[in-house]
Image 1: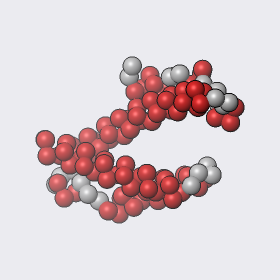
Image 2: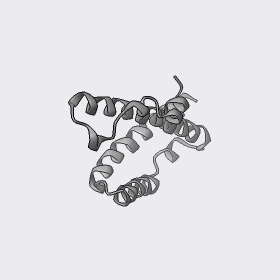
Image 3: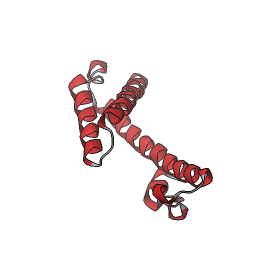
Image 4: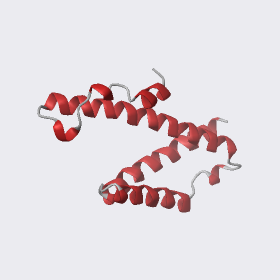
Length: 112
């Protein structure tokens, strides 16, 4: 199944009950598994943009952009705060995500 199909159809989500209605670990795990499939598909889509950046940037040094990294993490933390999710946790997650994205982009840059 393509990433667009997983994201677009909310694959499996129609059969998943809301977290607050879960009464068994089987229900919790089914919801988490369905969400994880969507998250991974979105990460794959995000990496396509890293591939585009690697193709567009003129030099290898341009791949690491600390001001942009800070802006991405700040934006994610602000979104977290807006949806009542812990911004500090999102900052930690995005630190790893952005560093992984930079490593991925460097690999793509070096392969061109």
